[in-house]
Image 1 (cartoon, rainbow, N blue to C red):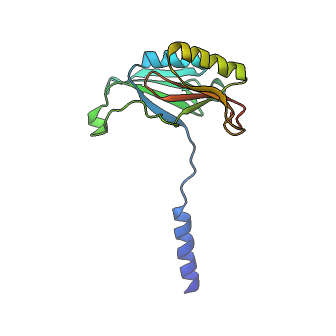
Image 2 (cartoon, helix red, strand yellow):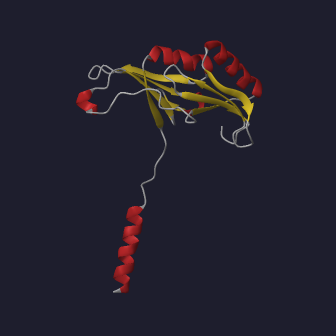
Image 3 (cartoon, rainbow, N blue to C red):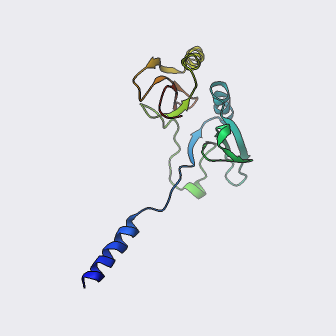
Length: 165
């Protein structure tokens, strides 16, 4: 009887573990795909690896990736998916259309190589009126950063001297 209980517990334990997973993308709705692509072209070296228009939903999407993450044409290990257009109610139902999710301290993080590069992004962002914070050094974990807003109000952090990137 003990063996049966142990086998049942082991089965429950292994069933509770999630399957292997891999973070592949973040999807952000945007009001203007063209404006958002221009923003990322101005402030980053991310590469547009895919752009398409879905005739069924009438939505336009683009995928941005680090060049070194591209695996095959149109695919990468991790992408930012930018989506423009009204939500297709036949697919999404009652999901509400919203923009600018990455606010407060939520952000996308972009790694740069030098403090001068962070300073330059901050200077350009200040000229465009989208600088939120910095540039400043916070601590060894956060590093030297500036925070700017994209055209939909999402925060994008540019940093150097972090353990990431």
